[in-house]
Amino acid sequence: MSLNCSLIPGLSAAAAAAALGTPYAELFSPRRSRAAVARARQLAVYLCHVAFGASLSACARAFARDRATVRHACAMIENLRDDTRFDAGARRLESALVTQRDMICALLAQGSAQ
Image (cartoon, rainbow, N blue to C red):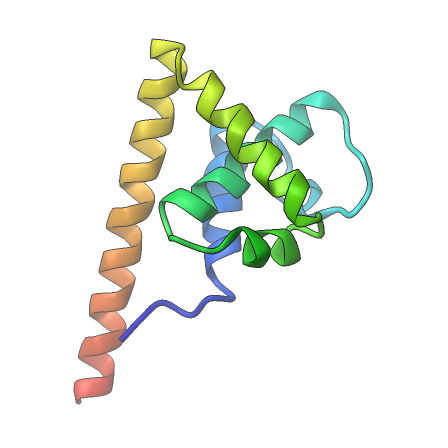
């Protein structure tokens, strides 16, 4: 059993919004945003792609951006990971999301087995 793909962007956005203190709903706005919101969205897109394995195209659709913008967002976060403090935080978020994904998948599998 796999995690419903429609849930993935929401999980990554919730993690990024909470970590960076940004309103969750703003991460899905199709409009340009202030720098803090754009950075949180970049992190959410990156987590969606890396922690959940979503394609760049799927991330683009979920966050109302084009694929090139999503590719740029992932590159920006990769560059920020050169900073050890940022990297430690990103690693913790990624690990927490993978754990959450695995837990949800196990619960879904358990429910479908009954």
